[in-house]
Image 1 (cartoon, rainbow, N blue to C red):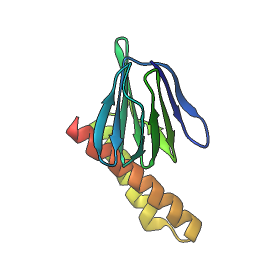
Image 2 (image 1 turned 120 degrees about the vertical axis):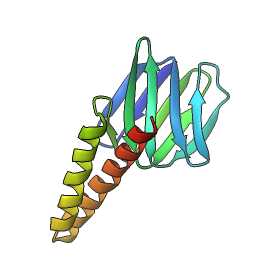
Image 3 (image 1 turned 90 degrees about the horizontal axis):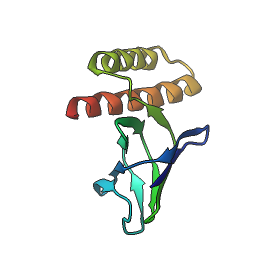
Image 4 (image 1 turned 60 degrees about the vertical axis):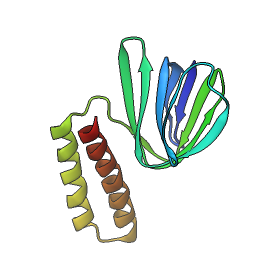
Length: 130
């Protein structure tokens, strides 16, 4: 099925997928070709896009997913590919984000550091659960 994962900055994925697993606000859901149409908001978590022989994992904090029988379109406020991360690299990312939060002085720095910390926490939590 056609799958797109889009942020305001770029298209993180556009292509075919065999299955997509999405962290919806009412619970995680899986989408296969022929799925009933619906729309869901997203909660912090990891989207898993399964393609032939590989899986792409993308951490998101919020957004919406639109599902139709032929496609899945995910519009994420922010997202980060975490397919190549392991537990130790996720913990290092979390440590760096906490340090940035501690060192932030201006409102803009605090906002950026807070976003980085939330994303790092989402990635670290979901890698543990995987």
